[in-house]
Image 1 (tube, rainbow, N blue to C red):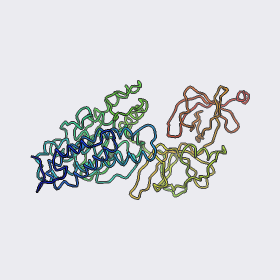
Image 2 (image 1 turned 90 degrees about the vertical axis):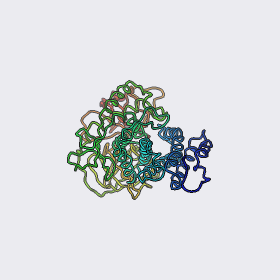
Image 3 (image 1 turned 30 degrees about the vertical axis):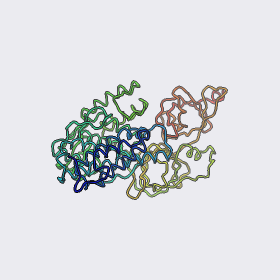
Image 4 (image 1 turned 60 degrees about the vertical axis):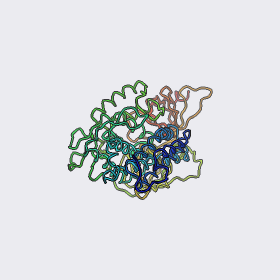
Length: 511
């Protein structure tokens, strides 16, 4: 019979029936409070672990962890939404989800540690090791996902735990045992499946995707994770490598890397066929039900774009830097966002008294730069943010987009920016065909040096680009006809669009 060490305890978790009664009292119609309460009880399980037999600890943990999953999926759906959340909502959801994943992962790892130490009740947990470790890695994935959503520094102990979860399963021969992850999640999983999915997702998304993009990427990888494989010897088809003996984040495999027995090599394998087949379906504008997004409804076009990027990252070698980076110490005035950048153009729209911020540039190339900024001074900066920049002693502003973010142990944000143009101009746009309600639209023209393509790249207000709408532009005293080519990228406050640029004769432009 499941019990506890020493004398009988009157704690509600010391008895399975009383623990079940605790679950009955959890608020069923309030996901946020339900997860908070269940997280508190899981933390209590960890705190009282020394008083419980190991099989009892795991039985109670399993009850609370399983009950929480339906509510956690609801919060994930609310958090990773297309519509931006208020700061209050975002912070509240993040804290609850992060605390749940933290306590769940710590509890699962604690059970594994006690089992390895041979504590009383370990024999009752042995048949459950595959599901214990698979769920432990799933919780660890959640911890990482919440860290990535805040571009936070990942504690090194998380990689150590991942090594222990997988390493124990590999050493004891249960890494490929098929087990159900949770009710409501179709199909079985395994320790290997959860391990390879985590490495793949983190290896291609951390610090380079927006929180929503990395969430969708994680779900896409989970869908195809049964096609991922891991080898204990070098494999020429490998994409990522993980070191079980000195665990750090997964790294791209380098041809000149030193090999040793603790390295594990991840191969995409059959997962790529699933990705390619899914891409064909998404190209038709269909998002199949068997790809699970915790009940969220995402547009097929958005998922398709993220999937194509995932496929490219897993099939192509990482791009080599075409322009060498130079270490430099220069002050850079910055303006965050489309409307702040408009104020820096020659249109005379400087309505605010905000002088912007000044960043120190760590290194720079012809196509980008990297700055290290205290977190408190980088409010609102995220992957995809539009950044106006003006180096000291340079008279004009440029434009760029944040592509990489990471946080260091001093709470500084390392910001990698791709430069779109070193000189911008404010322009007025109007419809090619005048109507009674025709209105002038203000945009930012990206003067791309030595561009002979006959194209115009414009930063526009969000949701204003139309592939069926030609525009007229006035620039430098000349009139141009702009024929739409493509919407290159969208952000929270901008559209980046390409147009064919055709200079108009003065008489035609005046008609």
